[in-house]
Image: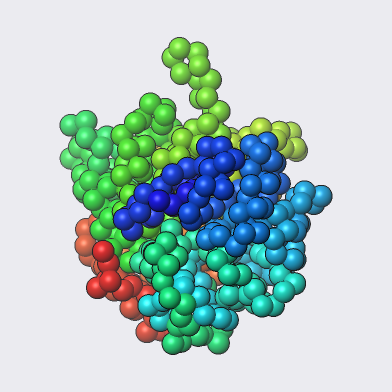
Length: 530
Ligand code: 1PR
Protein backbone atom coordinates (compact mmCIF):
# COMPACT_ATOMS: atom_id res chain seq x y z
CA UNK A 1 0.00 0.00 0.00
CA UNK A 2 1.35 3.40 -1.04
CA UNK A 3 0.34 6.52 0.87
CA UNK A 4 -0.27 9.61 -1.21
CA UNK A 5 -0.09 13.09 0.18
CA UNK A 6 -2.71 14.95 -1.84
CA UNK A 7 -2.96 18.51 -0.62
CA UNK A 8 -5.75 19.35 -3.02
CA UNK A 9 -4.21 21.19 -5.97
CA UNK A 10 -3.55 19.98 -9.48
CA UNK A 11 -3.57 16.66 -11.13
CA UNK A 12 -2.87 13.93 -8.58
CA UNK A 13 -5.16 11.59 -10.47
CA UNK A 14 -2.34 10.79 -12.89
CA UNK A 15 0.00 9.91 -10.03
CA UNK A 16 -2.65 7.59 -8.60
CA UNK A 17 -3.26 6.10 -12.05
CA UNK A 18 0.46 5.56 -12.62
CA UNK A 19 0.90 3.83 -9.24
CA UNK A 20 -2.19 1.69 -9.76
CA UNK A 21 -1.06 0.73 -13.26
CA UNK A 22 2.04 -0.70 -11.55
CA UNK A 23 -0.13 -3.00 -9.47
CA UNK A 24 -0.03 -1.06 -6.19
CA UNK A 25 -2.91 0.32 -4.15
CA UNK A 26 -3.07 3.93 -3.03
CA UNK A 27 -4.29 5.38 0.24
CA UNK A 28 -4.62 9.16 0.58
CA UNK A 29 -3.51 11.07 3.65
CA UNK A 30 -6.68 12.19 5.45
CA UNK A 31 -5.25 12.98 8.88
CA UNK A 32 -1.78 13.77 10.26
CA UNK A 33 -1.53 10.22 11.72
CA UNK A 34 -1.75 8.74 8.22
CA UNK A 35 1.69 10.12 7.43
CA UNK A 36 3.39 8.37 10.32
CA UNK A 37 1.53 5.17 9.52
CA UNK A 38 2.75 5.16 5.90
CA UNK A 39 5.04 2.43 4.58
CA UNK A 40 5.97 4.47 1.52
CA UNK A 41 4.94 8.05 1.00
CA UNK A 42 4.54 9.75 -2.38
CA UNK A 43 4.20 13.54 -2.39
CA UNK A 44 3.33 15.09 -5.75
CA UNK A 45 3.20 18.87 -5.62
CA UNK A 46 1.96 21.40 -8.14
CA UNK A 47 1.20 25.10 -8.02
CA UNK A 48 2.64 27.67 -5.73
CA UNK A 49 5.22 27.02 -2.99
CA UNK A 50 3.55 29.40 -0.51
CA UNK A 51 0.06 28.00 -1.11
CA UNK A 52 1.40 24.48 -0.61
CA UNK A 53 3.13 25.23 2.70
CA UNK A 54 0.11 27.12 4.04
CA UNK A 55 -2.23 24.26 3.18
CA UNK A 56 0.04 21.70 4.85
CA UNK A 57 0.22 23.87 7.93
CA UNK A 58 -3.55 24.33 8.12
CA UNK A 59 -4.02 20.58 7.91
CA UNK A 60 -1.44 19.93 10.62
CA UNK A 61 0.77 17.93 8.25
CA UNK A 62 4.09 19.75 8.63
CA UNK A 63 5.24 18.21 11.92
CA UNK A 64 4.39 14.58 11.05
CA UNK A 65 6.02 14.99 7.65
CA UNK A 66 9.18 16.43 9.22
CA UNK A 67 9.30 13.47 11.57
CA UNK A 68 8.73 10.99 8.74
CA UNK A 69 11.61 12.53 6.77
CA UNK A 70 13.91 12.71 9.80
CA UNK A 71 13.36 9.00 10.39
CA UNK A 72 14.62 8.42 6.83
CA UNK A 73 11.57 6.45 5.76
CA UNK A 74 10.76 5.82 2.06
CA UNK A 75 9.66 9.06 0.47
CA UNK A 76 9.22 10.16 -3.13
CA UNK A 77 8.63 13.85 -3.82
CA UNK A 78 7.65 15.14 -7.25
CA UNK A 79 8.12 18.70 -8.56
CA UNK A 80 6.90 21.01 -5.78
CA UNK A 81 7.16 17.92 -3.56
CA UNK A 82 10.92 18.23 -4.18
CA UNK A 83 11.11 22.00 -3.74
CA UNK A 84 9.18 21.92 -0.43
CA UNK A 85 11.99 19.84 1.11
CA UNK A 86 14.33 22.86 0.97
CA UNK A 87 14.58 25.85 3.30
CA UNK A 88 12.82 28.51 1.27
CA UNK A 89 11.75 29.57 -2.22
CA UNK A 90 11.98 32.76 -4.23
CA UNK A 91 8.40 32.00 -5.24
CA UNK A 92 7.13 32.74 -1.73
CA UNK A 93 9.65 34.81 0.24
CA UNK A 94 9.30 34.53 3.99
CA UNK A 95 7.45 31.20 3.95
CA UNK A 96 9.73 28.43 5.22
CA UNK A 97 9.90 25.04 3.53
CA UNK A 98 10.65 21.78 5.37
CA UNK A 99 14.37 22.54 5.54
CA UNK A 100 15.15 18.82 5.27
CA UNK A 101 17.78 19.75 2.69
CA UNK A 102 19.93 22.87 2.99
CA UNK A 103 19.48 25.32 0.15
CA UNK A 104 16.93 27.47 -1.65
CA UNK A 105 14.58 27.28 -4.57
CA UNK A 106 15.38 29.80 -7.30
CA UNK A 107 13.59 31.09 -10.36
CA UNK A 108 15.20 30.17 -13.71
CA UNK A 109 17.42 33.00 -14.87
CA UNK A 110 17.83 32.29 -18.57
CA UNK A 111 16.97 33.79 -21.92
CA UNK A 112 15.16 30.56 -22.81
CA UNK A 113 11.40 30.29 -22.34
CA UNK A 114 10.25 29.97 -18.75
CA UNK A 115 8.49 27.77 -17.59
CA UNK A 116 10.86 25.00 -18.65
CA UNK A 117 8.25 22.73 -20.21
CA UNK A 118 8.91 19.46 -21.95
CA UNK A 119 11.07 16.37 -22.19
CA UNK A 120 14.66 16.76 -21.09
CA UNK A 121 17.42 14.33 -20.14
CA UNK A 122 19.16 13.63 -16.84
CA UNK A 123 22.85 13.31 -15.92
CA UNK A 124 23.08 10.73 -13.18
CA UNK A 125 25.49 11.64 -10.37
CA UNK A 126 25.17 8.63 -8.05
CA UNK A 127 23.61 5.17 -7.97
CA UNK A 128 19.97 4.93 -6.96
CA UNK A 129 17.20 2.34 -6.95
CA UNK A 130 15.38 4.66 -9.39
CA UNK A 131 17.77 3.84 -12.22
CA UNK A 132 17.56 0.07 -12.20
CA UNK A 133 17.06 -1.06 -15.83
CA UNK A 134 17.37 2.44 -17.33
CA UNK A 135 19.91 3.21 -20.04
CA UNK A 136 20.52 6.83 -19.01
CA UNK A 137 19.39 8.11 -22.40
CA UNK A 138 15.74 8.48 -21.44
CA UNK A 139 13.98 11.81 -21.31
CA UNK A 140 11.52 12.86 -18.62
CA UNK A 141 8.76 15.44 -18.52
CA UNK A 142 9.51 18.72 -16.76
CA UNK A 143 7.21 21.63 -16.12
CA UNK A 144 8.48 24.32 -13.74
CA UNK A 145 9.71 27.89 -13.43
CA UNK A 146 11.78 27.30 -10.27
CA UNK A 147 14.53 24.82 -9.47
CA UNK A 148 16.36 23.77 -6.31
CA UNK A 149 19.88 24.91 -5.46
CA UNK A 150 21.16 22.51 -2.78
CA UNK A 151 24.08 23.45 -0.55
CA UNK A 152 25.13 19.84 0.02
CA UNK A 153 26.66 18.39 -3.18
CA UNK A 154 26.34 14.83 -1.86
CA UNK A 155 22.53 14.87 -2.15
CA UNK A 156 22.55 15.63 -5.89
CA UNK A 157 21.12 12.64 -7.72
CA UNK A 158 20.74 14.08 -11.22
CA UNK A 159 21.27 17.34 -13.01
CA UNK A 160 19.79 18.69 -16.24
CA UNK A 161 20.74 21.49 -18.63
CA UNK A 162 18.36 24.29 -19.46
CA UNK A 163 20.27 27.47 -20.21
CA UNK A 164 22.59 26.26 -17.45
CA UNK A 165 22.91 23.15 -15.34
CA UNK A 166 20.39 22.75 -12.52
CA UNK A 167 19.69 19.97 -10.01
CA UNK A 168 16.80 17.81 -11.24
CA UNK A 169 16.69 15.12 -8.51
CA UNK A 170 18.04 14.62 -4.99
CA UNK A 171 18.45 11.67 -2.68
CA UNK A 172 19.49 11.06 0.89
CA UNK A 173 18.97 7.48 2.03
CA UNK A 174 15.35 6.58 1.38
CA UNK A 175 14.27 10.14 0.74
CA UNK A 176 14.20 10.76 -3.00
CA UNK A 177 12.66 13.59 -4.99
CA UNK A 178 12.58 14.56 -8.64
CA UNK A 179 11.86 17.85 -10.35
CA UNK A 180 10.44 15.96 -13.36
CA UNK A 181 7.16 14.07 -13.37
CA UNK A 182 7.64 10.30 -13.67
CA UNK A 183 3.87 9.86 -13.89
CA UNK A 184 3.88 11.97 -17.08
CA UNK A 185 7.06 10.54 -18.58
CA UNK A 186 5.74 7.57 -20.51
CA UNK A 187 7.37 4.18 -20.08
CA UNK A 188 10.64 5.59 -18.74
CA UNK A 189 8.77 7.40 -15.98
CA UNK A 190 6.71 4.35 -15.06
CA UNK A 191 9.86 2.26 -14.82
CA UNK A 192 11.49 4.79 -12.51
CA UNK A 193 8.40 4.95 -10.31
CA UNK A 194 8.15 1.18 -10.23
CA UNK A 195 11.77 1.01 -9.09
CA UNK A 196 10.91 3.18 -6.10
CA UNK A 197 7.67 1.38 -5.27
CA UNK A 198 9.22 -2.10 -5.50
CA UNK A 199 12.52 -1.14 -3.88
CA UNK A 200 14.85 -2.05 -6.77
CA UNK A 201 18.60 -2.45 -6.12
CA UNK A 202 20.66 0.71 -6.55
CA UNK A 203 22.13 1.13 -10.02
CA UNK A 204 23.89 3.67 -12.19
CA UNK A 205 22.79 3.68 -15.84
CA UNK A 206 25.45 2.70 -18.40
CA UNK A 207 25.15 6.02 -20.24
CA UNK A 208 25.20 9.62 -19.03
CA UNK A 209 24.85 12.46 -21.53
CA UNK A 210 27.47 15.20 -21.39
CA UNK A 211 24.82 17.79 -21.89
CA UNK A 212 21.08 17.25 -21.87
CA UNK A 213 18.81 18.83 -24.47
CA UNK A 214 15.15 19.73 -24.32
CA UNK A 215 13.23 17.84 -27.00
CA UNK A 216 10.93 19.56 -29.44
CA UNK A 217 7.49 18.23 -28.58
CA UNK A 218 5.08 16.62 -31.03
CA UNK A 219 1.52 17.14 -29.85
CA UNK A 220 -1.50 15.22 -31.11
CA UNK A 221 -4.73 17.21 -30.99
CA UNK A 222 -8.23 15.82 -30.74
CA UNK A 223 -11.07 18.22 -31.52
CA UNK A 224 -14.04 16.69 -29.76
CA UNK A 225 -17.77 17.34 -30.07
CA UNK A 226 -21.11 15.56 -30.19
CA UNK A 227 -22.01 14.40 -33.68
CA UNK A 228 -25.43 14.28 -35.32
CA UNK A 229 -26.14 10.90 -33.69
CA UNK A 230 -25.41 12.32 -30.24
CA UNK A 231 -22.07 10.48 -29.81
CA UNK A 232 -18.95 12.22 -28.56
CA UNK A 233 -16.48 11.94 -31.45
CA UNK A 234 -13.14 13.22 -32.60
CA UNK A 235 -13.79 15.47 -35.53
CA UNK A 236 -11.63 17.64 -37.75
CA UNK A 237 -12.38 20.75 -39.71
CA UNK A 238 -11.12 22.39 -42.85
CA UNK A 239 -10.50 25.95 -41.78
CA UNK A 240 -12.70 25.15 -38.76
CA UNK A 241 -15.63 23.75 -40.75
CA UNK A 242 -16.12 20.26 -39.32
CA UNK A 243 -19.06 19.29 -41.51
CA UNK A 244 -18.87 17.31 -44.72
CA UNK A 245 -22.04 17.08 -46.78
CA UNK A 246 -23.81 18.69 -43.85
CA UNK A 247 -22.71 16.11 -41.26
CA UNK A 248 -20.08 16.32 -38.54
CA UNK A 249 -16.99 14.31 -39.58
CA UNK A 250 -16.36 11.36 -37.32
CA UNK A 251 -12.69 10.34 -37.08
CA UNK A 252 -12.90 8.06 -34.09
CA UNK A 253 -13.47 7.75 -30.38
CA UNK A 254 -11.57 10.20 -28.16
CA UNK A 255 -10.29 7.70 -25.55
CA UNK A 256 -9.17 5.13 -28.15
CA UNK A 257 -7.41 7.69 -30.31
CA UNK A 258 -5.62 9.24 -27.33
CA UNK A 259 -4.29 5.82 -26.32
CA UNK A 260 -3.19 5.16 -29.89
CA UNK A 261 -1.24 8.41 -30.04
CA UNK A 262 0.37 7.68 -26.68
CA UNK A 263 1.62 4.32 -27.88
CA UNK A 264 2.78 5.86 -31.13
CA UNK A 265 4.98 8.36 -29.32
CA UNK A 266 2.99 11.60 -28.92
CA UNK A 267 4.74 13.78 -26.35
CA UNK A 268 1.50 15.36 -25.29
CA UNK A 269 -2.19 15.07 -26.05
CA UNK A 270 -4.64 17.94 -26.33
CA UNK A 271 -8.41 17.64 -26.26
CA UNK A 272 -10.39 20.61 -27.48
CA UNK A 273 -14.08 20.57 -26.67
CA UNK A 274 -14.86 22.64 -29.73
CA UNK A 275 -18.44 23.44 -28.80
CA UNK A 276 -17.32 24.44 -25.30
CA UNK A 277 -18.15 28.07 -25.99
CA UNK A 278 -21.85 27.23 -26.00
CA UNK A 279 -22.19 24.09 -23.87
CA UNK A 280 -21.32 24.34 -20.22
CA UNK A 281 -18.47 21.86 -19.65
CA UNK A 282 -19.45 20.84 -16.13
CA UNK A 283 -22.74 19.65 -17.60
CA UNK A 284 -20.72 17.99 -20.31
CA UNK A 285 -20.01 14.91 -18.26
CA UNK A 286 -18.89 12.72 -21.17
CA UNK A 287 -15.92 15.06 -21.71
CA UNK A 288 -14.88 14.70 -18.07
CA UNK A 289 -15.28 10.96 -18.44
CA UNK A 290 -13.02 11.03 -21.53
CA UNK A 291 -10.32 12.62 -19.39
CA UNK A 292 -10.79 10.19 -16.52
CA UNK A 293 -10.54 7.18 -18.81
CA UNK A 294 -7.66 8.56 -20.86
CA UNK A 295 -5.56 9.40 -17.82
CA UNK A 296 -5.82 5.77 -16.68
CA UNK A 297 -3.52 4.53 -19.40
CA UNK A 298 -1.97 7.54 -21.09
CA UNK A 299 1.12 8.72 -19.20
CA UNK A 300 2.03 11.89 -21.03
CA UNK A 301 0.65 15.37 -20.32
CA UNK A 302 -2.99 16.01 -21.15
CA UNK A 303 -4.40 19.42 -21.99
CA UNK A 304 -8.09 20.19 -22.20
CA UNK A 305 -9.71 23.25 -23.72
CA UNK A 306 -13.20 24.49 -24.46
CA UNK A 307 -15.55 26.44 -22.21
CA UNK A 308 -13.05 27.53 -19.56
CA UNK A 309 -14.77 30.71 -18.33
CA UNK A 310 -17.24 31.97 -15.75
CA UNK A 311 -20.72 30.63 -16.28
CA UNK A 312 -24.19 30.98 -14.80
CA UNK A 313 -26.46 27.99 -15.39
CA UNK A 314 -30.21 28.01 -15.94
CA UNK A 315 -30.93 27.76 -12.23
CA UNK A 316 -28.88 30.90 -11.60
CA UNK A 317 -25.94 29.01 -10.04
CA UNK A 318 -22.69 30.81 -10.83
CA UNK A 319 -19.54 28.84 -11.60
CA UNK A 320 -16.16 30.52 -11.84
CA UNK A 321 -13.64 29.59 -14.52
CA UNK A 322 -11.47 28.38 -11.63
CA UNK A 323 -14.16 25.88 -10.60
CA UNK A 324 -14.51 24.66 -14.17
CA UNK A 325 -10.73 24.23 -14.45
CA UNK A 326 -10.56 22.50 -11.06
CA UNK A 327 -13.01 19.88 -12.28
CA UNK A 328 -10.89 19.29 -15.36
CA UNK A 329 -7.73 18.95 -13.24
CA UNK A 330 -9.48 16.53 -10.90
CA UNK A 331 -10.50 14.47 -13.91
CA UNK A 332 -6.93 14.07 -15.13
CA UNK A 333 -5.95 17.21 -17.05
CA UNK A 334 -2.50 18.72 -16.51
CA UNK A 335 -3.21 21.97 -18.28
CA UNK A 336 -6.30 23.84 -19.36
CA UNK A 337 -6.49 25.85 -22.53
CA UNK A 338 -8.48 29.08 -22.69
CA UNK A 339 -9.71 30.35 -26.07
CA UNK A 340 -12.64 32.77 -26.37
CA UNK A 341 -12.43 34.00 -22.79
CA UNK A 342 -8.79 35.07 -23.28
CA UNK A 343 -9.81 37.38 -26.12
CA UNK A 344 -12.53 39.01 -24.02
CA UNK A 345 -10.12 39.39 -21.08
CA UNK A 346 -7.51 41.06 -23.27
CA UNK A 347 -10.09 43.40 -24.81
CA UNK A 348 -11.10 44.51 -21.33
CA UNK A 349 -7.46 44.91 -20.30
CA UNK A 350 -6.72 47.05 -23.36
CA UNK A 351 -9.81 49.16 -22.70
CA UNK A 352 -9.10 49.83 -19.02
CA UNK A 353 -5.31 49.52 -19.00
CA UNK A 354 -5.37 47.30 -15.93
CA UNK A 355 -5.77 43.71 -14.83
CA UNK A 356 -8.77 42.84 -12.66
CA UNK A 357 -7.04 40.00 -10.83
CA UNK A 358 -10.26 38.04 -11.28
CA UNK A 359 -9.98 36.76 -14.83
CA UNK A 360 -9.80 33.05 -15.63
CA UNK A 361 -6.15 33.42 -16.64
CA UNK A 362 -5.14 35.11 -13.39
CA UNK A 363 -7.19 32.99 -10.99
CA UNK A 364 -6.19 29.64 -12.48
CA UNK A 365 -2.55 30.66 -12.79
CA UNK A 366 -2.44 31.79 -9.14
CA UNK A 367 -3.75 28.48 -7.81
CA UNK A 368 -2.34 25.95 -10.27
CA UNK A 369 0.70 27.80 -11.58
CA UNK A 370 1.39 29.48 -14.93
CA UNK A 371 2.38 26.17 -16.49
CA UNK A 372 -1.21 24.93 -16.16
CA UNK A 373 -2.67 27.80 -18.22
CA UNK A 374 -2.45 27.54 -22.01
CA UNK A 375 -3.95 30.20 -24.26
CA UNK A 376 -5.44 28.83 -27.47
CA UNK A 377 -5.46 31.51 -30.16
CA UNK A 378 -7.61 31.16 -33.29
CA UNK A 379 -6.37 33.90 -35.61
CA UNK A 380 -7.21 34.68 -39.22
CA UNK A 381 -5.20 36.82 -41.62
CA UNK A 382 -6.62 40.23 -42.46
CA UNK A 383 -4.86 41.78 -45.47
CA UNK A 384 -4.26 45.49 -45.94
CA UNK A 385 -2.61 47.53 -48.70
CA UNK A 386 -0.45 49.48 -46.30
CA UNK A 387 0.32 49.52 -42.57
CA UNK A 388 -1.58 52.84 -42.19
CA UNK A 389 -4.84 51.09 -43.10
CA UNK A 390 -5.11 49.50 -39.65
CA UNK A 391 -4.26 50.36 -36.05
CA UNK A 392 -3.08 46.77 -35.52
CA UNK A 393 0.58 45.74 -35.81
CA UNK A 394 1.13 44.34 -39.30
CA UNK A 395 3.77 42.19 -40.93
CA UNK A 396 5.01 42.47 -44.47
CA UNK A 397 4.02 39.11 -45.87
CA UNK A 398 5.53 36.86 -48.50
CA UNK A 399 2.07 35.40 -49.11
CA UNK A 400 0.16 38.26 -50.71
CA UNK A 401 -3.58 38.68 -50.15
CA UNK A 402 -6.34 38.00 -52.72
CA UNK A 403 -5.87 41.46 -54.24
CA UNK A 404 -2.10 41.40 -54.05
CA UNK A 405 -1.97 43.07 -50.61
CA UNK A 406 1.54 42.92 -49.09
CA UNK A 407 0.62 43.46 -45.44
CA UNK A 408 -1.53 41.61 -42.98
CA UNK A 409 -2.42 41.41 -39.31
CA UNK A 410 -3.64 38.38 -37.43
CA UNK A 411 -7.15 38.89 -36.13
CA UNK A 412 -8.24 36.96 -33.04
CA UNK A 413 -11.58 35.21 -33.19
CA UNK A 414 -13.91 33.70 -30.61
CA UNK A 415 -16.54 30.96 -30.66
CA UNK A 416 -14.52 28.64 -32.83
CA UNK A 417 -13.67 31.24 -35.46
CA UNK A 418 -17.24 32.41 -35.89
CA UNK A 419 -16.65 35.94 -34.64
CA UNK A 420 -13.65 38.18 -35.45
CA UNK A 421 -12.61 40.71 -32.79
CA UNK A 422 -10.67 43.95 -32.73
CA UNK A 423 -7.49 42.49 -31.22
CA UNK A 424 -4.50 40.86 -32.88
CA UNK A 425 -2.74 37.62 -32.00
CA UNK A 426 0.62 39.21 -31.10
CA UNK A 427 -0.93 41.66 -28.62
CA UNK A 428 -3.15 38.92 -27.23
CA UNK A 429 -0.20 36.63 -26.56
CA UNK A 430 1.80 39.40 -24.86
CA UNK A 431 -1.04 40.46 -22.56
CA UNK A 432 -1.89 36.86 -21.67
CA UNK A 433 1.74 36.25 -20.68
CA UNK A 434 1.60 39.32 -18.46
CA UNK A 435 -1.60 38.05 -16.84
CA UNK A 436 0.00 34.73 -15.95
CA UNK A 437 -0.43 32.35 -18.89
CA UNK A 438 2.33 29.75 -19.19
CA UNK A 439 2.06 28.64 -22.82
CA UNK A 440 0.51 29.63 -26.16
CA UNK A 441 -1.27 27.19 -28.48
CA UNK A 442 -1.18 29.06 -31.76
CA UNK A 443 -3.70 27.87 -34.35
CA UNK A 444 -4.36 29.40 -37.75
CA UNK A 445 -7.81 29.33 -39.32
CA UNK A 446 -6.24 29.94 -42.74
CA UNK A 447 -4.05 26.83 -42.47
CA UNK A 448 -6.25 24.51 -40.38
CA UNK A 449 -6.84 21.22 -42.20
CA UNK A 450 -5.14 22.39 -45.40
CA UNK A 451 -1.98 20.21 -45.18
CA UNK A 452 -0.04 23.20 -46.59
CA UNK A 453 2.30 23.60 -43.64
CA UNK A 454 2.35 25.91 -40.64
CA UNK A 455 1.93 29.68 -41.02
CA UNK A 456 5.58 30.49 -40.34
CA UNK A 457 5.07 34.26 -40.48
CA UNK A 458 2.34 34.17 -37.85
CA UNK A 459 4.29 31.82 -35.62
CA UNK A 460 7.46 33.87 -35.84
CA UNK A 461 5.61 37.10 -35.01
CA UNK A 462 4.00 35.63 -31.89
CA UNK A 463 7.03 33.66 -30.72
CA UNK A 464 9.27 36.72 -30.91
CA UNK A 465 6.82 38.71 -28.77
CA UNK A 466 6.65 36.39 -25.75
CA UNK A 467 9.03 34.49 -23.50
CA UNK A 468 6.70 31.59 -22.68
CA UNK A 469 6.66 28.42 -24.80
CA UNK A 470 4.63 28.40 -28.02
CA UNK A 471 3.01 25.37 -29.66
CA UNK A 472 2.69 25.82 -33.43
CA UNK A 473 -0.59 24.46 -34.80
CA UNK A 474 -2.61 24.11 -38.01
CA UNK A 475 -1.64 22.99 -41.47
CA UNK A 476 0.84 20.15 -40.92
CA UNK A 477 0.74 17.85 -43.93
CA UNK A 478 4.15 16.13 -43.94
CA UNK A 479 7.24 15.59 -41.75
CA UNK A 480 8.96 18.41 -43.70
CA UNK A 481 6.49 20.88 -42.24
CA UNK A 482 7.59 20.02 -38.69
CA UNK A 483 11.21 20.42 -39.72
CA UNK A 484 10.40 23.76 -41.28
CA UNK A 485 8.65 25.14 -38.20
CA UNK A 486 11.44 23.98 -35.87
CA UNK A 487 14.21 25.43 -38.04
CA UNK A 488 12.55 28.68 -39.11
CA UNK A 489 11.08 29.60 -35.72
CA UNK A 490 11.98 28.98 -32.08
CA UNK A 491 8.74 27.23 -31.08
CA UNK A 492 9.05 24.50 -28.49
CA UNK A 493 6.32 22.24 -29.88
CA UNK A 494 4.27 21.51 -32.97
CA UNK A 495 0.75 20.15 -33.01
CA UNK A 496 -1.15 18.29 -35.68
CA UNK A 497 -4.51 16.63 -35.99
CA UNK A 498 -5.70 15.64 -39.47
CA UNK A 499 -2.57 13.86 -40.71
CA UNK A 500 -2.45 11.69 -37.61
CA UNK A 501 -6.21 10.95 -37.56
CA UNK A 502 -6.21 9.94 -41.21
CA UNK A 503 -3.00 7.92 -40.76
CA UNK A 504 -1.33 9.89 -43.54
CA UNK A 505 1.84 10.28 -41.48
CA UNK A 506 2.69 8.46 -38.26
CA UNK A 507 4.09 10.31 -35.24
CA UNK A 508 7.09 7.98 -35.33
CA UNK A 509 7.77 8.94 -38.93
CA UNK A 510 7.77 12.63 -38.01
CA UNK A 511 10.16 11.96 -35.14
CA UNK A 512 12.49 9.85 -37.26
CA UNK A 513 12.60 12.54 -39.94
CA UNK A 514 13.44 15.20 -37.37
CA UNK A 515 16.04 13.10 -35.54
CA UNK A 516 17.85 12.30 -38.80
CA UNK A 517 18.21 16.04 -39.38
CA UNK A 518 19.57 16.86 -35.96
CA UNK A 519 16.39 18.06 -34.24
CA UNK A 520 16.22 16.84 -30.65
CA UNK A 521 13.18 14.64 -30.05
CA UNK A 522 12.04 12.17 -27.41
CA UNK A 523 12.70 8.72 -28.83
CA UNK A 524 9.82 6.26 -29.02
CA UNK A 525 10.39 2.80 -27.57
CA UNK A 526 7.30 1.06 -28.92
CA UNK A 527 8.33 -2.45 -27.98
CA UNK A 528 8.50 -1.53 -24.31
CA UNK A 529 4.92 -0.37 -24.11
CA UNK A 530 2.70 -2.14 -21.67
O1 1PR B 1 -13.20 29.23 -26.97
O2 1PR B 1 -12.26 28.55 -24.77
O3 1PR B 1 -14.39 27.57 -25.60
O4 1PR B 1 -12.23 26.97 -26.62
C1 1PR B 1 -12.65 26.34 -27.78
C2 1PR B 1 -11.46 25.63 -28.36
O5 1PR B 1 -11.92 24.86 -29.46
C3 1PR B 1 -10.42 26.59 -28.88
O6 1PR B 1 -9.15 26.12 -28.47
C4 1PR B 1 -10.53 26.51 -30.40
O7 1PR B 1 -9.25 26.53 -31.01
C5 1PR B 1 -11.16 25.15 -30.60
N1 1PR B 1 -12.09 25.12 -31.75
C6 1PR B 1 -13.30 25.71 -31.78
N2 1PR B 1 -13.89 25.42 -32.97
C7 1PR B 1 -13.05 24.67 -33.66
C8 1PR B 1 -13.29 24.13 -34.99
O8 1PR B 1 -12.42 23.49 -35.60
N3 1PR B 1 -14.47 24.37 -35.54
N4 1PR B 1 -10.86 23.74 -33.27
C9 1PR B 1 -11.91 24.47 -32.90
C10 1PR B 1 -9.67 24.20 -33.31
C11 1PR B 1 -7.75 23.79 -34.32
C12 1PR B 1 -6.64 22.99 -33.93
C13 1PR B 1 -6.45 21.86 -34.90
C14 1PR B 1 -5.22 22.31 -35.61
C15 1PR B 1 -4.47 21.26 -36.32
N5 1PR B 1 -8.97 23.24 -33.93
O9 1PR B 1 -6.54 22.65 -32.63
O10 1PR B 1 -6.40 20.71 -34.21
O11 1PR B 1 -5.59 23.37 -36.49
O12 1PR B 1 -5.22 20.78 -37.37
P1 1PR B 1 -4.52 20.17 -38.66
O13 1PR B 1 -3.25 19.52 -38.20
O14 1PR B 1 -5.49 19.14 -39.14
O15 1PR B 1 -4.30 21.28 -39.61
P2 1PR B 1 -13.07 28.15 -25.97
